Image 1 (cartoon, rainbow, N blue to C red):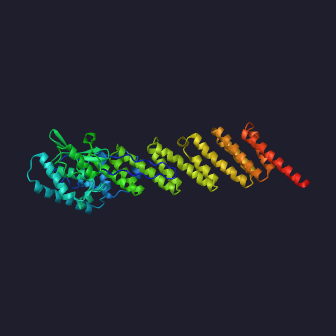
Image 2: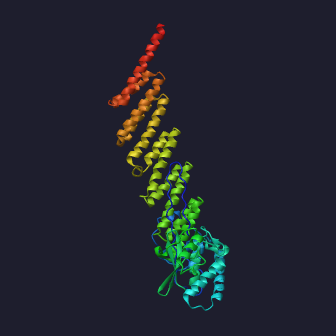
Image 3: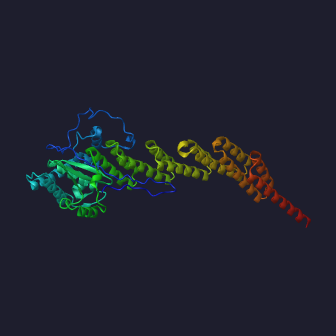
Amino acid sequence: MSRRPFSASPRTALQTLLLTWIGLAASIQAAPRPGDLEPAAETAPGTLPHPPTAPSPYARYEGSPGELEKRLLADAADRRWDNHSLLAAALIAGGVEGQRQLDHCVSRFHALADEAARLVGSQSDPEILAQQVFDFMHRRILVGGYRLESTDLAATLEDGRFNCVSSTVLFNCLALRFGLEPVALELPGHAMTRLRLGSVNLDVETTCPGWFQLRHDPRRQAALVAKTLGAGHADSRAGREVSPVELIAMIYYNRGVDLLSEQRFAEAAAANAKALRLDPTSKTARGNLLATLNNWAITVGAEHQYEEAIRLLSQGLALDRRYETFRANYIHLHYQWADRLASGNDFDKALEILRRADAELLGADRLAQLRLDVYRRWARRLFQLGRSERALQLLRAAELECQPAGEILRQVEVQTLADWAASLARQNRHAEAVSLLDWGLARQPGSELLNHRRRSTLDGWTAEVSGVVQATAD
């Protein structure tokens, strides 16, 4: 099976993107002539291997590819491999960075393929030949067992560990070496090989050593797949035949999943962006790039790096503005940022970041509510500092700035004035409380709360005066 995508745990009410984009594409090219599995000669210096193509919208995330990767990505511009074999492309996409290591891995493959050729001999029946090559692969190469994370073909050639991607690539390369016609299949969360045997197609589960022996027993085949993968049998009828370049794109996507699980966000984004360079239509790679940006934003947001978090979400929204998870987290991050600033009495800064926010994403009413909440807290702070006149000016400014809020604004103002008047009354500052309430009633004469608070304040004031008079008389 392909690597299952990673999703971060929710933090501070932020919604995470559930990475449901599980899928793996694999494919193969036409049978090679001798030497085709070696990397082809480079294009002459100063020339382009293909006509320039439109810049990828994901290029900003690709990072700084090494020389081998640069040549690989350029070679894929026409959606086929002209200067790379499938083997070399898979090795580079899997992480091989230097020519010496690449040559070593290619030589290792050829030595194994030569060994297989001596065992196969002159077998002419394509189905028997395919089985012999398949059995050799599992007996001599894939000896380390199935590992979900083992996409790296170079590592597979060394330690024998494999997953559906590396085993499909390896089997296809071997099949090509022996003149067979393999095509890779992409299934949800999985990859397989389809062999064209004349007019008949034979689908091969490359992860299961006993596949050919049980090909006429579907029930036992399914049990074998479940034992190997820890999952149910993948139905190849649901598969999609894919190109060799799309296979390499899925290697990059799988690497992106591994990197995301380690919270190496920039590298994960780069891997998915390269996958999208090779296969711009890949919903899997695109979905996981969006997931990477989302989880990256959540992580830096949890560290109070709100500006960076919102920048990442804004980039994601530029790629897919309709994605609800980005929208929800964009809202939550603005709320958290404004709340943190207001809690530190940095009210001007809180209002500034809300003014810069995308009103369409936040929604006019929600944005007005957030700004009014900052004004309310600021006014309350000014009341506490004894700066009542400045607090009242602030409420008037809120009215001008947040006019679309209408009823919400009136409610915020009424509640702020009523709360502060009650606080003044508890301090026996009744005259100030009544004056404040009169100011509010002049603006909102029909407010039941302000009228009620004024009556109760006067009653308290009267009781206090009566108590003082009685005490004096006594």
